[in-house]
Image (cartoon, rainbow, N blue to C red):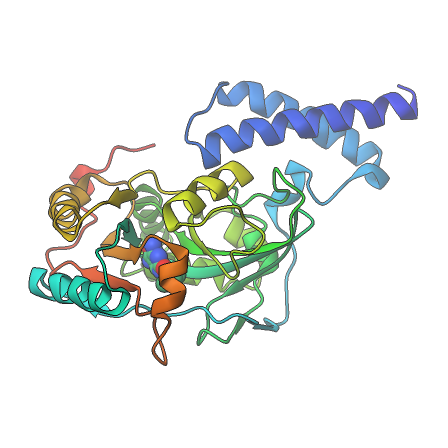
Length: 326
Ligand SMILES: NC(=O)c1cnc(OC2CCCC2)nc1N
């Protein structure tokens, strides 16, 4: 096949395969059977092997890892990753709302998000291209784990808009993947992980990104370092915008008009959390309007406009009989 036709075919395959991967890993709505994806993938591998000069960073073949690092470089967060003030009761939720209303002088709306029990990550994009991925670390300095995060299929290598932005979210291991991994480790005589969060952390701290690639990690994104590149003026609209950019967003997030609605959301999710395919340890409540967040500001470690309601500790969430095996 003539060189120019090969280049054309490679572009077609990359576009098609990246779209299929987006539907499968980001939207959880695959439109083709695995064997269709696999056949196109094999064709791309064959063409790239014959024409390595045509391999690009955003090719789906580059998500299998293989880089082995000596260690992780430091990653400075120009805008810190904040932690959250924890609350443990309905009374504390109401007190939080009273403090907010007193400070801004009127009632506010809240965005409620599931508190995903994974590892906090920060993803930097320049003109739509993924350039750096990092752990939270102490909030100001984390570890550069770009190579490992490139293997996490729900993390886009190219955004749907060529914007420069830094987004924050959680990288986690689904319950089903956690159980499968521990069974494999047990059969291999290796130590098992205590919970999906530890398994995700261990998978992201791998110096061999080929190992990370096999751990079936996923993500939910929920914040940006600086809202300037976005149109959104509220947390809830920002989640929609991150979805449109190509990020994986948690569909359980809810806009609550009153603190009473926040509490019923908390009760509802506390009841149904065992049915979720990933572990959560509570609900994050955020004042929805960005201009009110700015007015409320931060304490030395956490925003005054957010709170993390932690569910009371109960029996382990990962019950083998509850998991439908993917
Ligand atoms: N574990 C979570 O699911 C989670 C963690 N953090 C945040 O918000 C950060 C960003 C702004 C204040 C704290 N939201 C979440 N959903």
